[in-house]
Image (tube, helix red, strand yellow):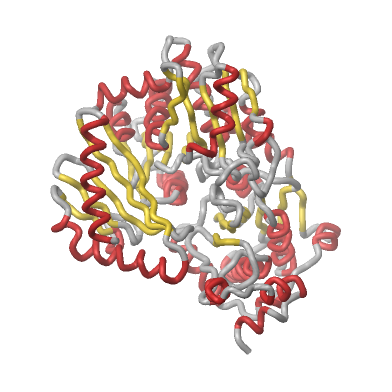
Amino acid sequence: MTDYEYWLTFDEQTKNELESITDKAELDDRFYKNLEFGTGGLRGIMGAGPNRMNRYTVAKATKGLADYLNNTVKGEKSVAVAYDSRNNSADFARAAAGVLCKAGIKVYLFDSLMPTPVLSFAVRYHSCCAGIVITASHNPKEYNGYKVYDSKGCQLVPKYADEVIKYVNAVDDIGNIPCESLESAEKEGKLVRIGEETLNAFLSEVKKQSVYSEKSDLKIVYTPLHGTGRIPVTRILADKNVSVVREQEMPDGDFSTVRSPNPEEKDALTLALSQAERENADIVIGTDPDCDRVGVGVRHNGGYVLLTGNQTGALLVDFVLKFKKDSLPKNAAVVKTIVTSGLGSAIAEKYGVETVQTLTGFKYIGEKICLWEDNGEHTFIFGYEESYGYLAGTHARDKDAVSASMLIAEMAAYYKNQGMTLVDALNGIYSEFGYYFDCLETFVLKGREGAEKIRSAMETLRNGGAELIDGVETVEDYSKGIGDLPKENVLRFVFDDGSWLAVRPSGTEPKLKIYFSVKGENREESEKRKQAIQAKLTELIF
C-alpha cells in the first residue's frame, strides 16, 4: 500500500480532499516527505497528507512527545496546551490534549485562544513538564504550526528536540493513534481547563517590568491583526489613550483584512496607519496572531515612519537601561541573536552591560535565561531579535509582545513629554553611535526544487563566498560550531569595517534569508554599499 492509499483509509473528509486533487505537483508536494518535526516543532500548510498540518500529523507529534515524557520524566506528568486564532488551531489543540490524556499525561488546556508568551508562562505557573502551543505565528492564513516547550517554558533547543524527534519518528500507523475524549478526561481529572486566572497572573508579572508611569497625552492606535493580542494588550495598556482597529479586533483565521498577518510588513498595518492619520495618533502598535511579535509606526514630521525590529530593539535597550542603570547588578546582560544589529550592543556597553549573542531563534535567548538562573553567571535584563521579538524580565522564556507593547507605549510617552518622537530618539542614538543600516532580504523557494536551490546556494557561499565578495575579512560558519553555540546552518561574512551579512535557510518556511548590517556615515552611504553587496551576492547564488 502506498502512502497515498494509506491516507485514503483515514476518514471520509481526508479521502474526499485527496481524491479531489488533480494536480500531480500538488500531490507530490503533499507526499514527497513527512512534515518535519524540527527544533521549533512543526509548521506547514494545512491540508491532508504527511507533508501538511492536520490532526494526524499533530497527533503523531504529540504521541512522540508523550512517549518521550513517559520515558524520561519520573512521577506525575503534565503539559500545558494553548492555541491561537488560526483556522483549526482549537481543533489541533484538542487533538493534542486527547492524545496526551490517553497516554496518561495530565493536560492544562486553555479554554480560549491565548498568546504564545502566556503559554510559556503557564508551563512554570502550573508546574508542567512541557508545553504545546498551536500557532504559525506571523505566517499567511494557509499555515499552522505546533511548538513545544520544556519544563521552564522555553522552546526546545536542539539537544532536547533531537531526542523528542526520535520518538516522533518512531510513531507509525498515524491513522490510529490512541486519543481520549476530552469529556471523559475532564471527568476523571486528567484534563483541567485554564484561562482567566492564569492570564491575570501573567499580566501581574508583566506590570512588574514597567519603568515609566508619568502621565502623558500620547495617543495610540493598536491592532491585534485578528489574533490573540486584543485582550492582554488592551488590558496592559488600560491606563493609556488607546484606539483599537475595529476591523481587525476580533479573531479571524482567514485574516480577511490583510495579505499576511505579519507586523514586519507595512501592508499589514495599513488600516492601523489610516486610523492613526484620522485620529492624529502618535504611534501605531500591531501584534501578530500569537502576540509574540510587535511592529511600531511613529508619527514624525507630518507622516508615519515604520520602525524595523532592529531599531525598536535598540530603542528599547536604551530605554530600559536608562531607567534601570542605578539598580543594575554587576553581572547584568542583554541577549541578542547573531543576525541582529550591533547597535544595541554598543548602547549596552555605554551602560556597562555585557551583550551575549545566541544563534537565530528566541529559544536560544530563553535557554540563556534558564542557564543563568541555575549558574548565576549573568542576570538577564533584556533580550531581542531583529524579527520584531522582545522580552524584558523572565516571566516568559519566549518573545512577548504584551510586555513589549507596554514598554513601547511607555517609551513613546517618555519622549513625548520631552517634545520628541521615537524617530527623534533614534536619530539621537545614531548621532552618538554611528549609522547602522540593517535590513533583511528574503527569497521564497517552495517545494522540492526550492529546497534544492536553497541547499545549492548555501554550498556555493560556503565554498567560495569569502573570495568572491569584496571586503570580507572573516567568515563565521556556524555549521561547524563556534564557541559554545550549537551547530546551525548559518554563514556570517564580516567586513573589514565591522559591517556584516548573514545567510541562513528559514527553519520554518521555504525561504532563504539574507541579513545585512552596514555601518556608515549616513543612510544614503550605507544603503548604497548594501545594494552593491547584495548585487554580488545575488549573482553568486541565483
